Amino acid sequence: MQKRAPMYHRGYTKELDVEPLVRQLDRSQRLAGTGSWEWQVGADKIIWSEQAYRICGVEPKKFEPSIPKFLDLVHPSDREKVITAFVSSISNHMPYLIDHRIVRPNGIVRKIRVSAEVDVHSSGDLLGLFGVVSDVTQLCAKEVGARTTTEILASMLRISPEAIIITDATGSILQFSAGAESVFGYRATEVVGRSVELLMLEGIRADHSKYVQQFAIGQRQSLRMGERAPVHGRRKGGSEFPAEVSIAKLETEGGGPSYPLCGIFQKFARPRRG
Image 1 (cartoon, rainbow, N blue to C red):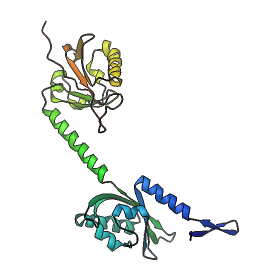
Image 2: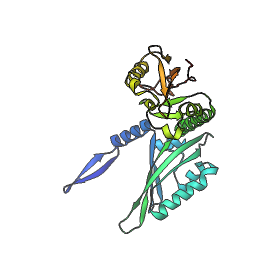
Image 3: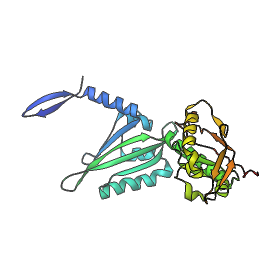
Image 4: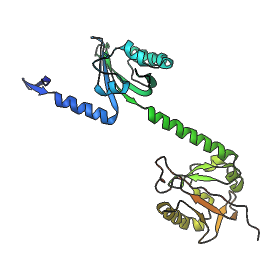
């Protein structure tokens, strides 16, 4: 039998078929990977959506949501911070957002993100909480991996004697190695966030920009600049020097270069002697 709920409108009552709405909500949450939950204080009742059950790895017919039962799913090392966030929210009538681990009944550990807002009566009494939950295990793993890679790269650049400069797709400098500081006379803090064209002679900046854009959309993954014309670098004081420059596309997580250019590797040689 389909579920129907009364709908009141301008003095008459009409039954509303909620079954399709429930199916649509469940489908939407499943595709989005986000479940919802509600705690009704007066009835001391907690309601989970189907996706919330899936995220926690429990079956609706075998698991009746409650605060103690949910805390049993929370990783022992995270229970204190979960309790603290929950108690603070209902005590201060404030929303909360927290990432923590759960241990599913099958022993698998997942990391979830829970956010909630409070429902408060006009009298100031707490009516309940409404929240959403999502599984962020893979997202957090990627973030940790990205931070680790970035930290390793930054550490290498701090000690590298080579002049290595990494920019984003617009040519804005992201990383500036110790060797680059020595060659150009700038501290990393002076150039990060500024255009790489700062390190070039004004007369070649436009041509350089076009050349790099062509390389970015082409098939080559790396090249040595100077094949068409000599390359010169520009030091902080304005002096110039001939250079050998190699650039390469930095690959993204998916394996392909970002558009138009994720990064530039530039190795400037010592000034040539005439």
